[in-house]
Image 1 (spheres, each protein chain N blue to C red):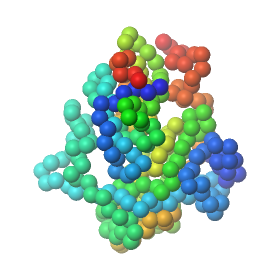
Image 2 (image 1 turned 135 degrees about the vertical axis):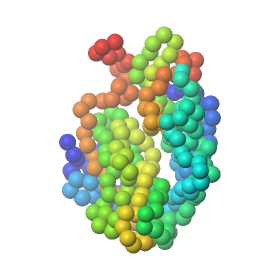
Image 3 (image 1 turned 180 degrees about the horizontal axis):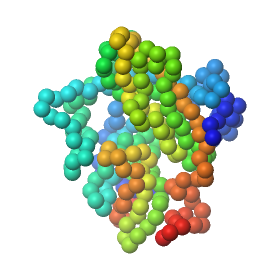
Image 4 (image 1 turned 90 degrees about the horizontal axis):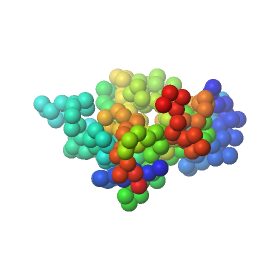
Length: 179
Length: 77
């Protein structure tokens, strides 16, 4: 079940959803909350002849550091076909006991320009805390200028059925139906 | 519940840290929010226990795509 504007505001008010900084009321629509772009991101540089093999034994993300470059996102020009790792300015928290998860989705105003904000990984799991990572891609033919603080994505909040195991601390914590 | 990490470095943004957690099948790298780590350990969710190992759920998906990992009991903080 998707939370409506009234339920989102109630959930923020009673701490079931934490958004820092607290969003302005006009950031909320009927069934979503708009989030804004942080002031920096990262781009990837390919190393010729050195593909990335995430499934290999010993794969190490830290070793990819030399391929990543920090970029400021004030007036950042995103070329057609380019990829950018970015984050929301807002820090989000979904306490496990809130029985809520979320999906980060694009905004239609940007999608019509060809701008995507995630690469098949929209789920914000129950218990998440942090700034939301955006895997941005310019699918359109035009260069798109990004500015920190612009509305970049929206969050859709959904109720979960029950509390996830990791959030359950009662007498029977750790027990399963089929031990 | 918390488990010890063996390595910590800064993440891509100030609010993130990359930590390495020892598991029964090798180390797992996971990027977490700085509020979820202290000087020695990282916050995880307890799922179950078997022999001298504990099944925990990581705060976020690890760099190899895992959410749940078996950790030696000795690594629980």
